[in-house]
Length: 479
Image (tube, rainbow, N blue to C red; front, side, top):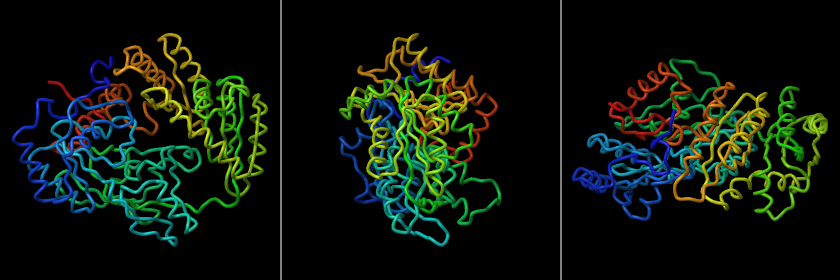
């Protein structure tokens, strides 16, 4: 499928750029009357909402930003929007990488960033109830006082919100052992497009009454309902110091085969992250370290919990069998330094230009094959594709660094070939970033016509007017 204009850097998500209509003015005035002190129309604020970290930008600013602080604020916004047929884009930190929080002309931005309270922490039930605007890092700092944590650990944990993570079903560095966001959410309270409040899920570990609407809402990218409260499943903090292992390899293929071998051996590691040569070079420059002196790819592994040291010995043996130059440590400071190298990948690449961060996942046994395919795509399309990988779960982030205002056609051609490879080897278009605007043109290739029609039907049941985050996930239908 050709991306055509649907995959461009500038996208139209709302009304044309010709200016607000009379209806738009009435909507903003109704919001101001109903929500005094909550409605922002400052041009600088509105312009910021036309983009996230995906590289996409809407061609016109939204009408207003509603800074919700209570559930009632969300309900009132939805009632007004529903009465006027005005679209709503939910947004919090704006750190998304798929264009899911991009807002355009004729749309209301509903910000849940200020809904950041911790409403309950129950060590006895190992759960917490929180507002959607709380940052991951802030939540886990509070939970640590109770010997607990919320396991989802995106690299953006200090700037991304729990609500955003749930809306995108985010992953992160620890998914291989602890699972993705969906596995750490017990219940959600959401506001529907017409202002009704619906409570889904359970506070109990088990619960199979009716359809699992809670799981359906997780990863729905703000298209079905607006998350206003989340009940999270917590884990005890792992006992004892983790063992952190860094290994340099002569090639990314060797590193990928080592990662697959660790998985095949049945070793349940907490974290396994791979950086290829272009990424390692960027990190080396960013961190002012001569990393390429030791190898052309880096694999980071962490073992935690009881038996971590014994498990680490087995992992080290696998890495050395595959040619790795291995360092293992249980020293907290040195472990933090090794982790910092991996977390520096995105900032290091951002320093080189605007990023188009792709997000495919493949069976873990096909990692080496996929890295080889990426090298072939680089040669075929004349681009460099730095790639990081959550090697423990097969989720790759091939990244294009763009220095021009628009994304060149050769980049989209390489991305399309990349998506085709992922699907051909039994993978998926996205492991954790979502579809948003970025990949909606290619979604039919993965879902097929029958499932695509079914999913559109589900959207229509929740949101008959199509007001919630319109244009995201599904490409606009043409007559």
